[in-house]
Every structure is written in structure tokens, then in C-alpha cells.
Length: 592
Picture 1 (tube, rainbow, N blue to C red):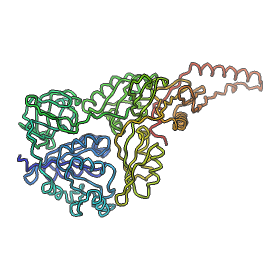
Picture 2 (cartoon, one colour; picture 1 turned 90 degrees about the horizontal axis):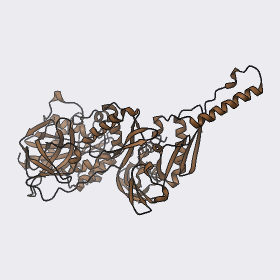
Picture 3 (tube, helix red, strand yellow; picture 1 turned 180 degrees about the vertical axis):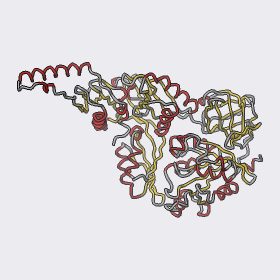
Picture 4 (tube, rainbow, N blue to C red; picture 1 turned 45 degrees about the horizontal axis):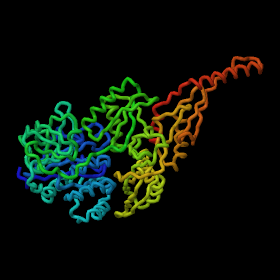
């Protein structure tokens, strides 16, 4: 295909603004998919994606329209996958910005627009869902004009569900979007913007050819990971795989390789030929590291091997997933798994339970901390249980994030209070029409548990939230341990700021009292910093009336039986074991 006849573009939007539905209509209008094969969210192949109505894995598809080759990438809308979105934006020349006519501009819309402007993309603004009774097209138009500085006539109003005006979007792509830029003259350089593991074929890469040509069966090299492989098959996605003899400059397609895991070909890496290697890789590659960690334990220890096999299988397709074995005296053997964020953790948990039929106990999510020891050594810990003896610790640094919240003007006060509650600081406040954009900084650990839920309830669901990791800062942090019947439970230990420790200790012990069932003996629940107890709750014992069989009013006999019961309970308290239910390990997730 002549380079001038190629248009590479992606669709960016906040979650649930209609990206995948717009992609469906485009494929239908261009005849890429026959009507009888059409189904809602065709590019969302995972059952979980359809159910939640979100895009988790990005998907490319090639369409032919009016003699032009249109390459579309449907990107995820959630903040956890923003690195993947940034790489797919690097693979294209233009972007369609979809904004919901009923909701207006949201936090992820802003974040993705900034990413698109960084890559210098041509942006086509589209307002979706204009046929809904609640649509306020004029208000959303003025928001977009404020944000992009475009003209009113540049904005296209569509209904992706009914197909209204979708042809106008396709015509705008052909007329206004630039063709791929001429090559730099280097040997083959292809950008990997996604990769996954196929059980039968190995690792499949989705690539954009920036320079040169990639013939079938060529030996290839990944420049960042320094791995060699073979391009066993190359081709285009329409949306199913269609093999070709070669992929040419400016085109988007797939490569079936002989690699065994996506860790050897990560998103953002540059593919080149082994014989004629390119001099420099493409810019922007980053090794994405997880910063949310949680312990995953099978309910029955016999399922540990199944859990390990399942995670290994998921990790073949997800290079951001990191895990290591963990052992807890209460929960037995399990894995400590690292995620990109809470949505990523939710998705993996649901996939393990659905696809592999596992029954899991998940501990409270935590983040990683940098610890500097008295002898000058720097170590990284992923959970409070890993913290060395406090006498050896010189300083603990915790990760802070830069966040952005978009909220209606009349709700600013509640949001600012919430940020202060979480030890955050507001850094900036600006306005887009009737909405306020609040920029703030806050410790990552305080946003992990229920910040999003609290934000939604404070703003009646109107706020949207976006964040990115900023840096690590030294703070006065302590490890709070929880003891059940005098026994320390490592899986419950948390790191928190000294000023919040007492309140959190009281809150969690209260929660545990509701969750842990009563025993035949009294059970003490305690929160402690080192040897100092900061909170206590007591679960009362079941009391069996041992005097029920005495029909006379003999006080001595009653006293004798009660004394015997008291000694029995004391002995039971020494040897008795408290059964801790799985809900006890997630009490931090929902504090309300």
C-alpha cells in the first residue's frame, strides 16, 4: 500500500465513554466484519471486559475505506494501563478523542489528551451519545473548545450505538489526519505496542513498522531486552489474523515469534533484524514496575500448586505481573504478587477465580517502601512483615503520587477535605467551564484502600480521578502489628504514619471483633507498635450455664461447678486455637 494512503489512529477516552462501540460501528460501516458476525464490543475479547464494560487489553484492527488503509488501535481507558496507552499513541499519527455527551470531560480524558499532545498527534474531537435524553452537547462542546482550542465545526457529534454520523468521523480521518512520516533511513525498527502469549503459537507481538521492511521468517532482535527470536509469521489484523509475506514501513500488524514469554518482548521495545541491526532504538521505552502488592493464598493448602501454575500462565501474557512465594503461619503457603494498580489486581483475582476455579484469600494491598539501614544499606520491602528490627532502621521512604481530580465546582470543599484526611496536599486548582481540576500530592498507601470509594460518595459519583507515581519521600512511618489471642498475625501487619497509627489500630481491632467468631474462651484482639499496645478489643466467651442441673439452692455446689468451669476456660485459653476467617484479611479494603 502506498504510504500516502495509510492512516494510523487510535481512540482515546475515559472509561465507559463509548470507545469500543465506536470501533464496532467503524468496522461495520467499512465492511471489515460482516453483519452476521457482529457482536457488541467485538474488540473486547475477554468475557470480563464485556461484563465490566471496560477495555483491558488493547486491540488493533485494519479497515479499508474509500481506497485508504485505516489502522485503528482500541486503547484501555483506565489509569493502571496508561503506559500501554502512551506506547500505542507513539505507534500512530492521530487520535480520536471520544467524550460522553452526558458526562463531559473526565480525569482520564485529560490525562490521555496530554499524552496525545506529548506525541504531537492530530486530535479529532468526537462527542458520543448525542441521542440520549440527558445529553448536553453545547456544554460538552464548550469544554472541548476550552481544552483543545479547536473550532466548534471541528467537533463531530455521533451516536456510536445507532451509527449516526460515524461516516463523518471516517471521512475526517482520511481528509485531516496525516499519513505516516517518511522513514529516518535506518534499518528495520518496529515498535511493540502490545504482546500476548498464545498457547499454541508462542508470543505474538503487535507492532508498528517505523523504518524498513520485515519479511516473514527473518531472525529478529528485541533491543531493550537483548533477546533474539524468529518472525515465524507476519501479517495484518482484520480483525482476525491475515498472514502476509512482509510488513512495510508505516504499517501496523502482528508478528508470531518463537519466544516463550512476554518478558522477552516487552511493550515499548524496538524490534530490529539480527543481520542489519538499527543503530538506535525508538525512544520512550520504560520497564514498568508494579507498585501495589498483595498476598494471594489458596483457601486449602492443597491448591497452592494450582495457584502457582495459574499465575505463571497469566504472567506469560502480562509482563508487568511479578510474584514470589510467601509463607504465613496462619494462611499457609501463597504468593506475594505485584500489580500496576487496584483495577489490575481486581482483574487478576477475578481471572484466577473464574478461569482456574480457585478459591482465594487476598490480604490487604500494600505498596513498596525504601528502607535505609543504620549501616547505610538500602533495601526495598513489599510488605510490613518484611521490615527489619526498628533499631537497625535509619529511615523509611514511602512512595507519593501526583493526582488529578475533576469535579463539579460546587463539590470542591468535600474533595479538599478528603485529600487532607489522606495526608495529601493540594498543589493547584483550575477550571474548565463548570468543572474544577484539582491537582494534589498524597502518599500512595493512603489512596490504596478505599480512597476511590470515598471520593465517589463525597461527590455523588461525579468526580473522576487519575494519578501517576511521583517519588519516594522519608516520613515518620511505623509498623502496626495485630495480635489475636496473644499471637502475632504477620499477614495483618501494616505500615502507616505514626500520627495515624492509633486511629487505624482502634478501627481495625473493632472490625476484627465483628469478623472473628466467638470461641468458648475469651479472645483478646490487640494492635501494637513494637512492644507498646495501642488498641484492644475483647471477644467475650460463650458461656455455658453449668449450674442448670442443680435443682436445689446449694451455693457451695454452684460455686464448685463455676470454679471448675473457670479452670477449664483458663486451660482452653492456653491451648485453644482461634480460627480466623478469610474476611479478616481484607478489613482494610473497606473501612466503612
